[in-house]
Length: 356
Image 1 (tube, one colour):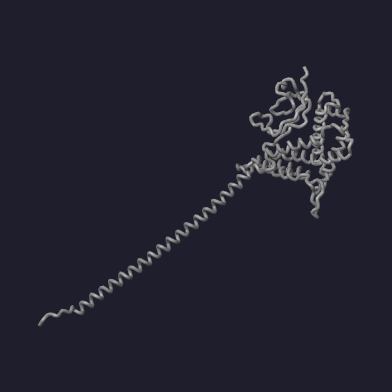
Image 2: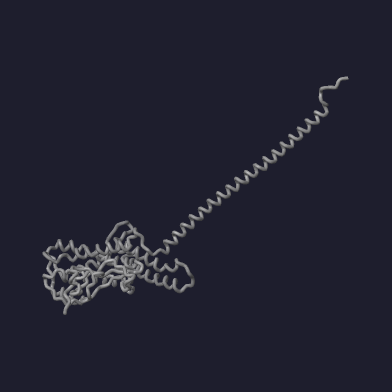
């Protein structure tokens, strides 16, 4: 009997079963590996998200730290920025404007103005000048009048800001500036004691008294004695400026007389602005500088020094002339320390020949 060509059915089924089992195992292994792979992908994505979130938070913290450092830098930085109205350049510019305003107020002392020479001579003695004046000496007359205007306004300022005179002013009226000024002096002194007498090391507290002084006096310099605003938003001139304006014009009338009443009114109207500017510059804005700037009057017979004085002399006569009258003071920082001295505006001098 011939052999059959068909394989053993049982063997074939067994092989198929084995193949199917192997396939199913491979399939299960694949699914398991795929599941593990997907988990790893998800875990990796989660880690990536966490990393990105950490990076975002890190950037936020850096920004916050940068802002803090910037704020801290501003808090301890004593240098006035270029845009600050009280920086040295602006202060010098406004001092020069004041000089021009004073010259306009004093006028040329010619033409329709009669000069009281006797009173001018007394005024020269007051400021220690021994020069004998005549009507033809207009530069000397103008110089001593300008000096007197400044000194008179200084006197008004001392009266207004005197602590013992606070009772004479309404705290929330025309006395706001003097109350604020006196409170500022007290607060700055307390800040100095606090910074010096309390244990600790930090830049913020160290500069606290200086920053406090700068901020308060900058505000006073910017708005002090400006027009007053009523509750109904109406504006009127500061009462103290009006009061001292009348006093100043009356005082200067002792030394000059206008023949033209309209000209007199026009010139005397300038007094209020000059008073406000003198007080703003000398009482407030010098205090904003760090170190505090000072003003210095030079005396009769002082030696001429062009490095901090200006006048109409020639270079070759410096050794033979001296101060007759200083009619605008030197504005400077640390004048006595030549290595640190900073001059804002030179003293304006009318000179005379040196006596031998």
